[in-house]
Length: 377
Image (tube, rainbow, N blue to C red; front, top):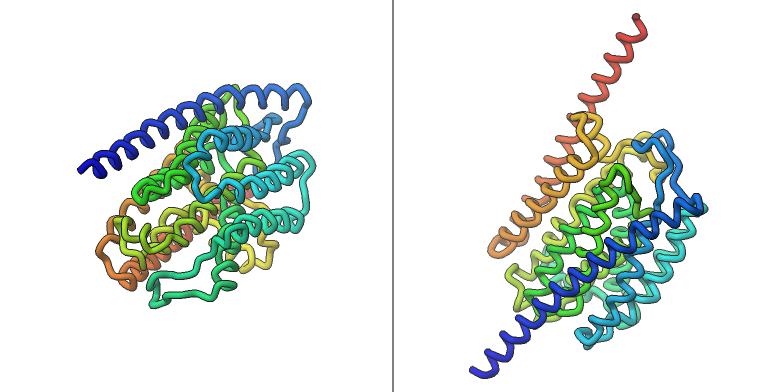
């Protein structure tokens, strides 16, 4: 009885501390972001508008600096909740991505340079404590994985997430909104299995991102997160995903969902950035274009161009869609068999693909008709 009361007290203490951490991160972000913006304007370090941009004037794009500073400071206060010293494997990777992202936002680096930096950052994390995915717990009938293969899969997942977050950061509010939803989902799961450090990191990132959104969505004090911010976000979300997939048996027992459905739930959490990235790469390759060359084929651009809505509304629609999919798949993941849930999830992806294909073609025909009518005049 005393043990149960003590355990409940610990849970209550971590909840209270997470609220304090969240509020502190929000206030720090609310203070730092305009300071960074003012410094960038003073030094004339801004992103110039191009043919893909919706902004008409140079805009500061180093909002990600605040993410790095807030994370580094937060580690000092939440490290007592990190008995496994995960934080030691995070700092080198975050620092590498911060430096490379900063340089890319200021000078533009070659894609290969950024990829090598990402590989270095995630490899340091994965192999510091050999944080590999050693089992899929029955997903598609697969149980144990070879250690080398498990490490390679973890590295691939993290690099893919970093680049997926970078690619969806194309309109105001989208990357931050989707990241808040993803951190909320991961935070809930890590709270359920009492992984206190990762739960607190999620609270820190949600607070910092909400503060950033205040300025990212502003018309007078706008600032972008830049590659600095998107790569840091992608790295931390990748850490959450790999940590989730590499849970031990005791942690899996505390999860409300079936262990074999974990990869599908991860897919639901990451669905917006991953669906958009895979879709865009496929379209560009099919058109014999460079898959890394930016264009307006992303789902957020299609939604904006087709329905003539603002960045804020498009980000809201995609964010809500992500949230609903997470809730639905997680609910089904409690009792639904693995193959049934997998088939359902694949059908959902196909449905999304068909939807965006139809509305993209419709908007293309409308633009062609409008152009022909103008030519006739």
